[in-house]
Image 1 (spheres, each protein chain N blue to C red):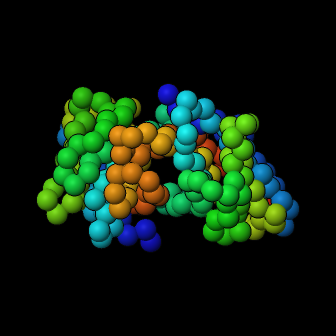
Image 2: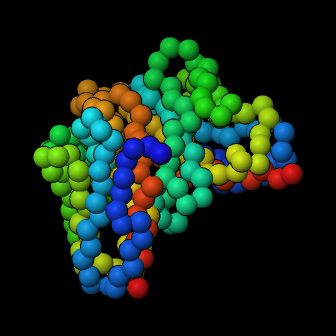
Length: 113
Length: 116
């Protein structure tokens, strides 16, 4: 158990819908990262937050957005969903924004029908 | 831009045999290197990391890796594998930039299949 929690574990929805994925980092970790894992794209970095502020963006679509709240939990919002958005979405956290390992949550499996 | 190449998508091996999973990276700056393991239906778990110092890094579950700067490689090895080592292994690189941001770039993964 990495100490990072993600909810829900599974999510099934329809095209055009909007969903919210939630992540709670390990106690004391200030950085939260979101990744997407799909068969065709592999593991892709989406976005990072540090202590409530967005720090970097990766291959995140404009239909996707995220935020980190004062209690440091984070939410990833996916809207106007398409079939291709079906993937595993991982959240990771780390102590700070520099050197160190990232601890990954168990992921949320999103299926868009 | 950084990139990671894992040359083998799948490596079959018999139990108790040695194994090497290959990883090559490209980066214009000094890097940090990581190996993560993903068991079925689970998240990623860190096996080992190279930040600085000794180029031979020991990790959990008997795995080790050697950082070779001249060959830009960070191959993962285990002298004797177990059935329970069957999993997907990801190599990742992060640069040592001054931005304070540690972006991980992952390889495509290598599936290790250990059979009796």
